[in-house]
Image (tube, rainbow, N blue to C red; front, side):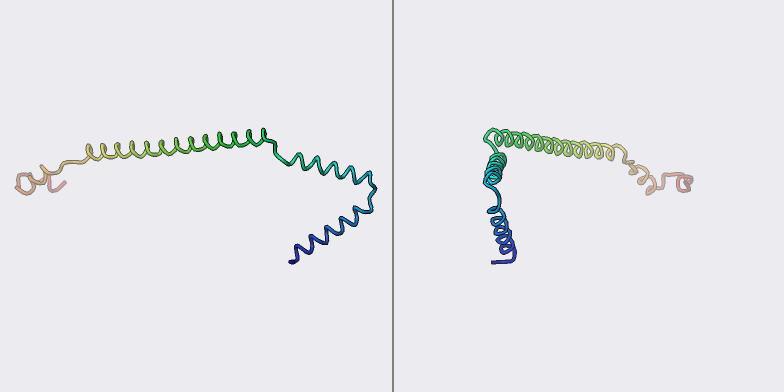
Length: 114
């Protein structure tokens, strides 16, 4: 028996000794109060059904919200990728004509200075 179990046993013994000193009227009231408390702590079938259905509804709403955020994030990434691709395709300067002119010495001297 460990220390906690010994302490619990000592408390039980002290409570039992104290309860033996009480009047029968007080003991019956304590017993009925205990029974009412025990009945209130046990969930009824209706409560547990309502609670579980509410929990399921919240979980479904949460997963739908999470799924919607996921698809929105994917859509934003796809749109950004397409926009970046279009930007780079249209904004790349084609220097091939200038390069060919430089190699063939067809450009005037001021082009080299600028």
